[in-house]
Image 1 (cartoon, protein in one colour):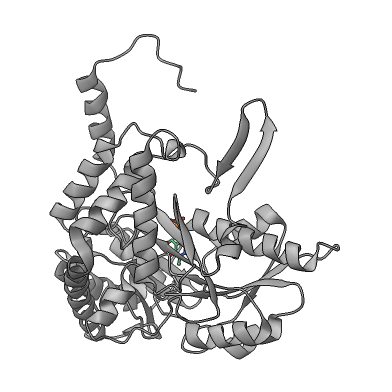
Image 2: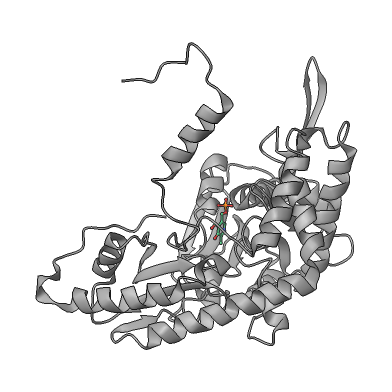
Length: 415
Ligand SMILES: Cc1ncc(COP(=O)(O)O)c(C=O)c1O
């Protein structure tokens, strides 16, 4: 039965009570039982993000140039702070967007437009060359713009195979992609080598640091191994980094940067085609929440490098404990050598998809990789308090999956 449009209105408490009742049945993300989707630093960061969001709750970032100049200023400062963090050369530019997908679509569009401007259109279908571990947002962009995607198997260490990628490049390649890190395994691609390849072949290298951008520099500051991926590398033409992930800012917020101001000119939309005159935006969407801009500005200023470094230290200590716990469960191993807080766990002895089903029965929402089969978690400090419970349930479920009566897995990997 289709829900009818309500005839009469309901009171504020009544409506809110129903939302609360409905969400009571949702997965327990606060208890660390959801392996992705929500990121948290600590209560203080949550509070400042929420307060700043609410301060600009009604304002529309589409009006940042003409009405809400404070939003425009905050947006510019968020971008400039990102350019600084990502070691961008002078003249580099950037934009805020509503998420990693939008940042990627905009960067692909800029690369496509530049290629068209430089090479002409001449019936050629541009292609994007990337490791198989790259995010499907590139495929989404390619479908929208009728581009070809060339996904190339990664190396045995799950990092981009630079020589194999080079073999897939041709005269119609408009973008080479590397991730920092890739979502499936949390491993940073060899961006320095990709940058060299890009420079030698005159290619546009995009670094997808959506998930790691606002975490990796601080993990490196702790003295841990985090390979360079930033914009000081000369082949990196654009870089995407999401604020609403490990920047811990309210959704929806991401950033995308271009090393060359001339390339950034291909980023936006600008048309004077209708009765209302010029319409220019730097996002696909029109209306955007002002709260997300204010929230990003507030959280970055609240934390600063020192705050992000402290949080990175706490998070990586929890990840160390997780990896140690996995190592202590017979039959399980960490897949590859992840750099940050995404960890995939595989097995040569048990079907980890069956383990995931048994874990789901205990209330742990499954995150999975299919090639190879793995249990996937993108952890923030949200996952720290329940770490021991997770590991002990995992040990029990792994042992159960080994038994003949455990049955076969029905579950499929879905994002
Ligand atoms: C590496 C990477 N790129 C892009 C995205 C897309 O980000 P969003 O979901 O904000 O569009 C994600 C999301 O997890 C990601 O991990």
